[in-house]
Length: 364
Image 1 (cartoon, rainbow, N blue to C red):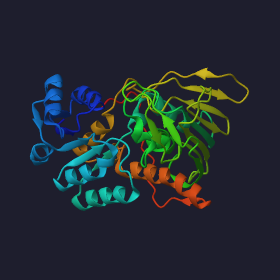
Image 2 (cartoon, rainbow, N blue to C red; image 1 turned 60 degrees about the horizontal axis):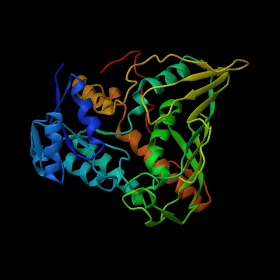
Image 3 (tube, one colour; image 1 turned 90 degrees about the vertical axis):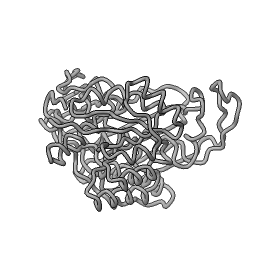
C-alpha cells in the first residue's frame, strides 16, 4: 500500500494524540507540523520525532504533503481549511467543521471544485463501541429503531478550565462543544436528520471562574447553556437530545439509548472509542455485549486514516468522517437554536449518506 504524507497545523493540546496516533497507520507518514508560534511547532516536532517544524505558509507550500490536519481553534477552522484547499491539499479538521453554516458550505464547495476531500472530527463513531452498536442494529437485535434519547449534562467549564470564557461566547455552549459527538453518533446509527426543534436558555447570565488561573473573574454568558432538542430522522425514528452546562449535581442518565421494536440498546459515551455496550430485549435484563470491532482506545486520527485509504483505493465510501456528514451536524446544531428563536421546526436543508459500517475487526 502506498503512503500519504501528512502535515498538522496547530500544535496545541489536542495535537499530541494525533501526533502519537498517525504514525501507527502504515499508510500515513507524518512529515511536518506548523503553528503560529514557531517555537511551539519546534517543541512538538522534537517531542514526536517529526522531521519538519514549519510556519503555516511553509507547510502549505510543501508539495510533498498530501493531507493537512487542521487543529486550530474553532474560529480559525474555516479560514485554515480554505487555505489548505487553495494549496491543493486534502484537509481534515477538528470539530466543528466551521462556526457558521455559510463557512461550512464554502469549504465543501471549494473542495468539490478542486476535486479534493474534506474530513472532520469526530471520528469516535468509527471506534469499537459505536461500530458494535451499529452491527447490533443492522443484525436486528432490537428490531426497527423507533426512538432515541441522548444526554450531555454537566455544570460547565469554569470550575476546571484555565481559560473557560470561549465556552460562553457565540460559537461555544454545550451544543457546539459536545453536540458534534452526540449528533454524529446518532446519524451514524439512525441516518440523516429531516427536521429539528428545540428550546434554549441562558440559565445563569453570569458565571464565576473557580479554576486557579482566573479565580474569581466573572464571565458574561452570550450563548445558550441549556438546549433541549427533538430530531426527526428520515428513517422515521425520533430522538430527544439535551446538552447542558447548567446541571449542578450528577445524573444517572445514559449517554445515548436507542429504542427498537424488540428492545433497547445502550450506546457508550460518544466522546470515546470503546464500550461498554448493553442490550435489554423485551422481557429480559440488561446484557453486556462484547465489542465486535477494534479501535477501542483513544484513536483520534482514525478519520484521517480512512480518508487516506479512500484516496489510495479510489473508494470514497471508505471516507466515512467526511465533510458532508460534518456539515449536516453543523446545520442541525444551528437548527436547534433557530427553532427556539423562531418558535417553529427547522427543516434541514442538507443531507448526507449514512456512513458505511466497518467490517468486523477491520484495521486500517
